[in-house]
Length: 478
Image (tube, rainbow, N blue to C red; front, side, top):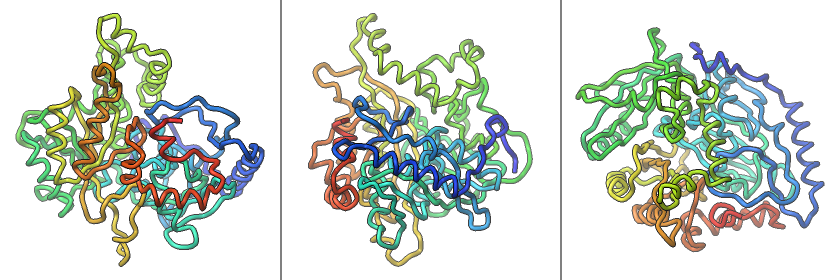
């Protein structure tokens, strides 16, 4: 196994084992019991990867720092037991020691496994492995009634297992997740394929999804970037153990800029598997440019340890707290800016329509593309085993479109651009992730995110409604 500079710098924390994990969970249950019965329950978290505004914390919260560990790895069964607050940075560093990786690793290091399952996640393996929650074999959940239940695809709590994804902690908190792993290659060989129109790019995604290859070469990883309507790219990754030189995008070179080229032939590149996994984190995709971190003179002075998404997030939090960007815009005589930070999914056959509309309607570039398809377990009831709070259709290819920027605010309508996006996505039979601002009315939200099913689960697992309900949390931002 070839480890990257990131692995050598980070190292992996010790695997804690089940005895220590049980002690942490027992402490968590005691904390829950100490909260007055008429008080709401929340987590006492210092950090978050959410981009929507949140109400000020009130009352005591559950301390969950002890859930940040890898509990066990079984290299023969290719599984890992992991605490709900364990970051993918720690999880990947640990599993790579065994030559294994989670089936889907979201792009940013500080995303937690529990967060990716209860709030969804995606990456370039999603066209073959689906979403992170689909590789969960079982999950222990601290419910709103204060008990820990083990939920799996079968058994007495299968309803919670299916309804947990996209519940954002409103049906309970994951204390342990058992996930499937897959072999990790030492290297990933990349082809950056340029397209001069969106239609051929969509056709290529369809071909890769059907055959697992493109122009006679296997595709194990697939995502893309759209710069303009006539300049877009698919990056096709292939697992390889062939030794050879690799690129480094953790220093002065910037990954997303390396994708661009004018040639009709694909541009080729190679990365270690760990550097591939975290290729977007160094510059938070391309968002580090907002802080000047892509300016060569500033970048040379910017400490390497601060060239990562978690630090940029701290800068964003400061801006949200003190309205720094809006104040700077006001000094220039400009209106405040509306944050447009979203990931949406539309069916493959509607993707060209959405992207074309988006490029015309909003001055944001580039945008990210990530195809996905729900995993097929091979069970005869696959079609009936959907995820009701994020109801994508089995056997249908979708494309996640990610855009993370801001636009001038429309006077008197601070959510104007985001509402336009919501309407367009719904019209194209799509959904959007709920980690950022949402403006849906209650009825539309119910229809899109399994409202009736969610309320049944809430009445079962949180009968006293001590946890905030989903609509209040993600739309009303209570």
